[in-house]
Length: 105
Image (cartoon, rainbow, N blue to C red; front, side):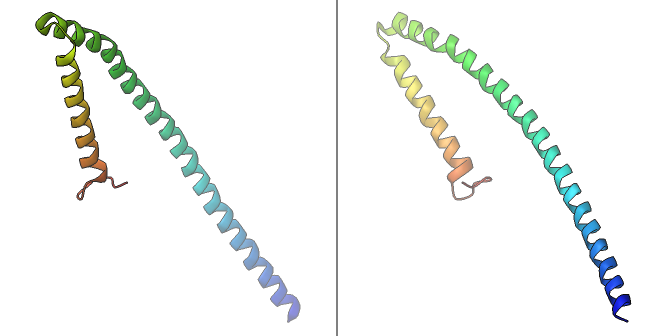
């Protein structure tokens, strides 16, 4: 009777180990896919950010030149930049820190 019980316990243990191993393989497969997806998303974000930065290298000097041509100084361009940065802060706050934020911080 003891030998049969030990044999049954051994079978149960091996079955649990196989089930656990299968679950671990599924988890690791999902983790690897998540890492691949994250790499693709990071590359897309970097490309988009770089494109915006390239526009900045054109528009900032252009804004200074236009402001100097219209007013004789850079004050107008600086006020436009300040307004833009305040709007960026407001949008960021609204979407990430506001009361009804979709993605709360």
